[in-house]
Image 1 (cartoon, rainbow, N blue to C red):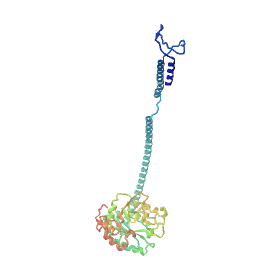
Image 2 (image 1 turned 30 degrees about the horizontal axis):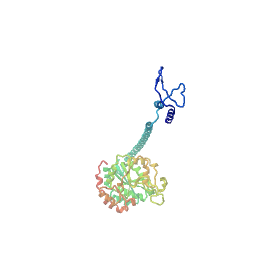
Image 3 (image 1 turned 90 degrees about the horizontal axis):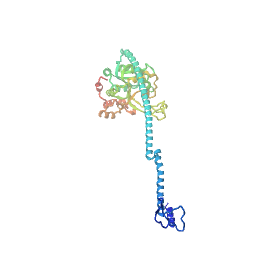
Image 4 (image 1 turned 120 degrees about the vertical axis):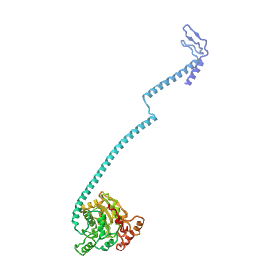
Length: 439
């Protein structure tokens, strides 16, 4: 634009020389005489000065600029009113709205999932509660049946030589064998009362103690007559209709619980081996803590290896049922001593015909109870070691319930050592007599 204006100015300067005085004609028009060298004035054309042309150019430029700015700014303003162009803030608002909607939908889904899971949990709890109720009813039915048997047996046994009370706190069955006469005598001379004291313990404290024995393969033979003679002297045997034998301990255990629950209505039924030292007062006090529990299984819980190799002492012929070789048994009480409540003994009595028997009697008992609503109590005071272990615990105020040597599954050389163990770890002969009658 400036280049164009400069060229116009040069052309004007080359043609225009001077402007003469202004004259106004009768029509009011202004005439500006201009001298044009080297040319002649054309008719109807008036000469124009260079400054005027310069001013007109500048004015035209300014007018054009103003007009173009108006043309471009007006549509933008209208467009801004009709169309909203997204900006950064608008994008943020859109993201916020989207995020809020997503959060709301997610919360709805989560709340629905939570409601569904809550209903599922309530249903499972209801099913479990129903199962427990059914189990309880079955136990109560078994108890009702056994009570009828108890009352019948009590009437039959009242005229016999055995003093058999209808009620008892606990019945202790001592597992023994034909060849264990010396072991039985070692117990009678230490922790087990005999004669009148035994009967007094039953009557006053509700504690019944019996040696549990079956019969020989030849009923009425020499072995059976020897047991009959010993029983006539001490009156501390419970005879089972069972052929004695080490491989028949599971059957003997089942028959023992079925027998005692039909004779004595006790809170607890205990099984103990004839080479274990026992503190009767401590046993009664320990069991009393669980008197209010209907189904309780008390002992030193263990999970030993399943022995598949033949010839070993605790070989398990049905080892394949417990999984791969090297697996362990389920938790169960060690066989030296354990106790179960009345309901569990009644369950064994009612279902004795269909209870599977494994080679080891403690495993068998554990398998009978593992599928029931039973509280397993791991009571370590039932498996103390012999002196110095039980002696140290006694001096520290933690008197043991039972003591034996794990290496021998009982007191090693129990006939010779039982008196020493009783002297070091015994609670005293008067302890059991000071128990509360509430037992």
